[in-house]
Every structure is written in structure tokens, then in C-alpha cells.
Length: 464
Image (tube, rainbow, N blue to C red):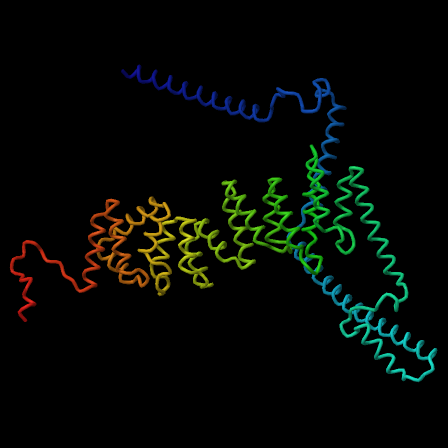
């Protein structure tokens, strides 16, 4: 046994040594495999012969380095730190203020120039006349006839030709003619540039939009109409007045038709536009069709409706987004919603949580809508399923919950509650119907008498 044990221990030692050697060998092999990778496929853009040629590889490496440097430079130009945007906004604000002050000074100087011309004309007439009238009378007559106090300008026959105005007219005509020429030549990107940068925003109108619409889509190129609206909206902060409602509506329609909801989001939230009910309706309808982006569209439509003072539609957007508490705060803030408005709301957005919030106290204030009238309204407008869900929720609370709801409902009459009880009975809510009738009897001073109670004398009141 001793010999066998000694032999076994020697064999075990040999086995362990072999395992250690094998482990070292495996480790070296793994390291060798990680450092070396056999090129199983040719390098993209190179043939097999070029892949093994040192000169060709060196040339291709320089090409890739140049391409990398070009992309890096493009990225540095295309993207800037967000602080740079804040600095540019501040600079733009200063420039706009300077422009406004310069325009005001220019208007004052123009008015002074007009007055001096009137005085010059009056002096010429007075010198040429027999001087029977005073110079002051002539000036007053011209002032009355020209309405200088309203600063409406001097009539053309009293003004000499203004070279700067003539030059400006030439520039306007040039831009219009050049724009039409570029459209006819098919150079649409240049036409967009001329339309956007024309003086006095002369080409920012529906006529220009219709011309770009007539072009339609060009295969492989961006839509000229979309380029036009992108440019017009991006420079909207540079003008004193925002983009008008017609162009705003057309721009939103164009962005949505091109599936560029990202642009529409930026326009609505960042640019100076003139919102309208039609613009909100377009975005709202688009959200109904595009269910994936429905929440974004509802939020945008809500912004527009709120800006336009269309509180009913803004409230509907809040409810469809599921922001029930926000909707309740909105109702409490504006206080312009009637009972009929809220009935229409639950018809368009049959949300159980919304109906429950409207029919209960909110922040210590009485309910905005009667529970009983809400139930009757739902059944009357073929929304039976929603009405049944509402009855199911209220029946879970038992008779105490029903009594509390009825006592705190100042809008629903006894007759209407009887109709609610009948509706409950017709739809299988027998217990809820009995609870409602029981509360009605207790409120009217009537008590229920059990059929088994023989001690009650129904004619007792006659003998008193």
C-alpha cells in the first residue's frame, strides 16, 4: 500500500506539472491570437493586389487621413458650443435695438426734411406773390393741406425726386425680375436665396409660395418650398414683426407634408411666428393620423391654441395627452368653461379619470360637472360603454360613496337622479340603483318600512 501511495503521488505531481505547462502554452497562444488578425476580407476601396502593396497602402492611408481631417473640420464648422448661440442671441438683440433707434432717428429726419420743403415752397410762393398775405398764412395753408401732423408724407408734386427712393425701387424690381428669371431657368436654390433676402421682405408672400408649390418635388433634391420656409423662419428674429399668419400656416403644412415634424417643432417653439386656429388644427389632425408622434403634435397644438386664446381646444389637447391634473388646473385658471363645454369635452375625450375629477371636489371647490348629468349625457350620445365603466367605478365605493356624491352635487335634480337610477337598473346595476333611490327617499324625509315589521301602524297619523 505504501508503494502504491508513493507511485500515485508521483503520478499526481507529473499531472499537475503538465497542467501548468499546458496553461502557460494556452495563455501564450491566446495572446498571439489577439495581437494578430488575419485579413480575411480585402480593404474596402482597394483591390487584393493593392492591399499587399506598401505604396498603395501608404497612399490610401494619406487619403483616409485627409478625409478624416475634412470631416473633423466640417464638424467644427457645423456644430458650435451652445454658449456661442447665447452670445449670438445677445449680439442680435443689441443690433436690433440699434436698428430700431436708427429707424426712429431716420423718421424724425425725414419729417424735418418734409417740413423744410414746405417752408421752402411757401417762401418761394410768398416771394413771387404780391405779398398781400403774410408768410405765416401761406405756411399754415400748406400745413393743413398736407396733414403734416399725422406724418403721412408730402404730396409728390411738392417733393423733388428722391434719388435714394428711386434707387430702392430699382433694387426691388431687380430682385423680383431676377427671382422670376431663376425660377424659369430651374435654379431653384438661388431663387430661394433671392426670395428670402429681398429688401423689405418683398417676396415673403403667398404669391412666392404658390410659385414654389407649382415646382413640386424634385427627385434627389430638397423641396424648394421647404427650403424657402426654413430660411424665412430662421431669420424671423431679425425683423420687427413676426412672420404673418398665412405664411406660418403654409410653412407648417409644408413641413408636415415633407414628414419634417422636427422642423415644425423648432418653428413653433423657437421662431417668431403668427399663430392661428387653422395652424393648430393642421398639427392636431396630423397627430391623429401619425399615432407615433401624436403626443408631440398635441403638445404643439396646445401651444398654438393657448397663444390664440382657444382655451377649449387647448384643454382638449391636455386631456388627450393624459395630463388630467394639468387640465383641471387649466380649468381652474381660466374659469371660462360652461357645463355644456365640459360635456362636449368628455364626449371628445371619454377618459374615466377626467370624468371623475370633473364630478368631484377639486382643491376645496365644488365639482365642475354633475355626476348624474354626466352619466345621462354619456348614455344619450351613444357612449354606453364609457357610462357603464363610470357606473362600475362608483359602485365599488358602496352606498356611502353614492350618498356623498349625490349630496355634493348641486346641479342634478331629484328627477334626474331617478333617471340615473333607472339607467343603472336597465344596465344591470341593481344595487347601485337601490342605493340611489334609498338616498333620494332619505333626502325627501321618507323612510323604508320592512314588510316583516307588523308593529307599524300606517294609519296612526290620522288619529293624532
